[in-house]
Image 1 (tube, helix red, strand yellow):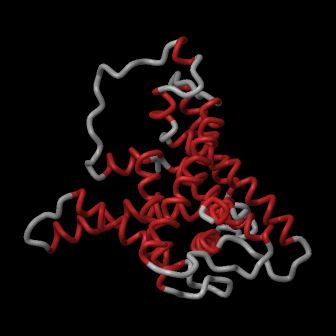
Image 2 (cartoon, helix red, strand yellow; image 1 turned 180 degrees about the horizontal axis):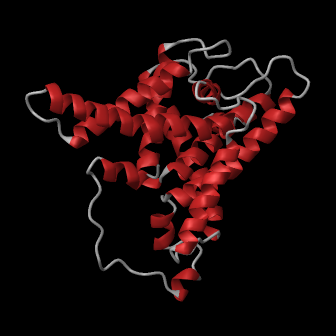
Length: 280
């Protein structure tokens, strides 16, 4: 869900001012305006951003897995398919189709309400996500370099094209699971347990902070599970944990679409060696 949605569900969203400025023709001439910063966090824009991410992932995985006995896909996507298969979902049916269908329904519903969809926001979102990806990479590597010695990244024994494919899958499905689903769900569960069994009701912000830490720990741990996972080291685990915390911050501030693309582009920049070149 968009960044403001889960905060609203937890009672953390501030009431918007009734005097909020409306979109005007003059505003519409600007490439990025106040409407962009507000609207891009909505689900309809988040899904619009998720569609090209899913399409690129599906195309790359189809190309790199063509004729290969061992099929490489995003581990989180495989986990989602395993779960959905229990309810009769066909594993061969791409999950990206679901994003397209939901987006079309939301787009149709929004148009019926008379709300406009600004397609220029998508282009601005790609640029913003690239900036976030660069900032996140530099900040994370600098932080971990102060905490521990050694390399923060380990070499994955698959081709660069497989790595690029899984980068887009990671941006989409890892943000969907670890940020969109796990943070609100774990925060709600913490509040429920606190209210049910605790003497004093836990503050919502405390529950949310604990949920972010928990989701980041799970996010980091998952990267060390599986046949092609990274070997477990304290530095690698801490690096992924901090990355989960930072991605949670981007999700809270900018919503699912920006967080997913920032994650994907960050992974692509790592594969291309951009951060190694920047930091020597």
